[in-house]
Length: 325
Image (tube, rainbow, N blue to C red; front, side, top):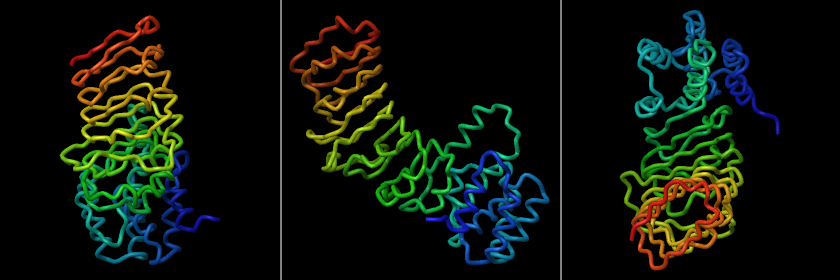
């Protein structure tokens, strides 16, 4: 299926190698008032464009494809946004129902990227590839996020009304390497995120949410990942029969206060270096633990141990081992 004109404009805008901002304005003007995404792109350029001439041109185009009220809103935001813009706070304040905030934010990121003033290239690249949606108040993500073809790290909305399942169709289109969830209602482990082909870090923290039921795993597994390196879960009770794995590339596991009853999902994680399972419901040490020769740090404190046996012969890399009954 061929991309629509708006999708083509989105791809031009998100191109990191070529500055297509002026071309985006030209193509958006030709689409007229019916292209909502183009309005968001033009709005963002009108606010965050690198020079006055570009911003003025964007305001002119915005007047063609939108309302005078929206043009005035762009002018007001432009006066302060150059110095006091924060994408997390932006999502908590945005109230324009005619423009997808992700379209505006995409234009913002590309305007900043193409300015070329990057004293710390590595830091600037990570900032460009990151998106903090923790203050995003709406129940689901919108289609505009699908155009963030460069996005690698995302903090998802941190409220119990966030519909992760309804947002997955957009997230799964992105080359995400790290996904952070906090304060969400998760009746099931979000196994769909494990389908992200580049996923290396998955972090799930309870925050202020108090789940009433253990987190289940849906039927139909196995639910594993060949790329995942870091798995962090904090405060979500997990069902006794939770079915996860294999995770052959895992390096670090940090699962705290989750009522975890078994480590079986780690039996095929030979590269594991750090294992932290504090405050769970573990009773015995599995034999495969003796074969994880890359282990450097183990924390198994605050578990109701009943039997302890571990052959340390092959664990030559082990530096720290914490265990309490």
